[in-house]
Image 1 (cartoon, rainbow, N blue to C red):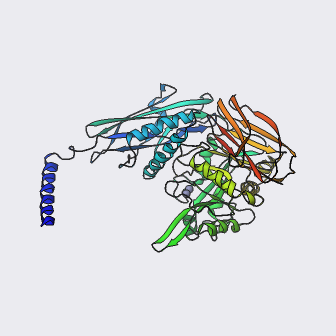
Image 2 (image 1 turned 90 degrees about the vertical axis):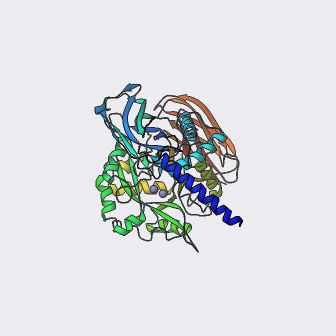
Image 3 (image 1 turned 120 degrees about the horizontal axis):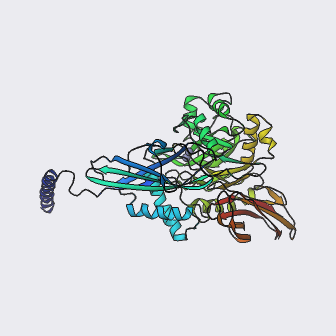
Length: 533
Ligand SMILES: [Zn+2]
Ligand SMILES: [Zn+2]
């Protein structure tokens, strides 16, 4: 009886809804349309670069059956509007937030991200909020086809930071929605020092799901000041097309053909690992492969995390090395943190708004350094960054230390491939968000080194910092997982000037590791230097 009464109530309610819907089609009850323009926040070009190409996306909601139509677009540079002839905008559909992120959350995220861009470190609660909203936004953006803003005629612009402001007006039914975004464009050479080469260590081309050829990637990297581009195609695409069964196949051959002494491209891979469950396959994350000479044994979605890492390592041993991609990714986080024998973790990758020492990726990296310090003679979780380019650049820099400049300039492409891959395996890396170069040596030994020292022995640390942007920076040389501060300085720095310090330190005995962290307008991390008694 009761059940039958509920059924009648339901049918009556349904009839009322149907009448209401037909009386007021589409409009009634529809959410007021809103949208937010999301950009990379930051981009970087070498002086003299004529074309800037910046990825953007619009996240919105409430459009219902009304398709948003772009009615007007205006772009200004340092407050002056650019002529239409200098601007090409490839418009794409909105990414629908569909309740996953709200207008107020995105407005807050953008304001915090721009404050962080200017050098204001977020406090812990802001950081947690940034990561929480950032992950949900990244999941929405993953479904978006990014729009591309191309600005031409910029070759004579002055060096330094510029403000590129974009305003787009959409008509959604009878409602007008206006969105704006500001991108900091830094026109600067990437800071250098003897032996250090700037790299992007994670990108996809048309060999898998990227939108540019390897030659196209190379041109973009060259205009942004990179010497090294390590292409990391999904192994499923490489293997099904048979383009990397050996170093003479088309994938490595295309890398070699696109390379010159300014910017060289190398053939790597990205392999999904996981484990079987009674429901099927469960992905445990993505590993990156460097120094491999084929895709033999690197089948996607086939290996458990440790077996997958070992497959990469044995592929072209001892040159090859596996790394862990985007450890806290919204969709493909790395899950097995008991693994051994890997050589690097991405602390900066793809869409990311947080680079602080207490951010999720940095916290995970720090705990891995602590967990794995006993193995530092054979492998270490060195710091890595990569754009994870598919259609948008995020110009993080991994500076890779080669034995000497001769290792780059005197040899063949094969020699450069060997030198870069060996440096990645040995952990001779430092990373930065915008391109600054920060590194530390101990008694002349590079980051990634594992040294034996006597208790009480004096260690000579040398700290080197060359910021890509002027501003107030704090440099800290940490021991272990932030257990103590060995040395720290706050400085007001000029762009592309070199700042150096030496610090004498009495080695306290037992095993420790030391790494440099820089915060301010740019964020930098170095791979540790390890010491054992
Ligand atoms: Zn991935
Ligand atoms: Zn990737």
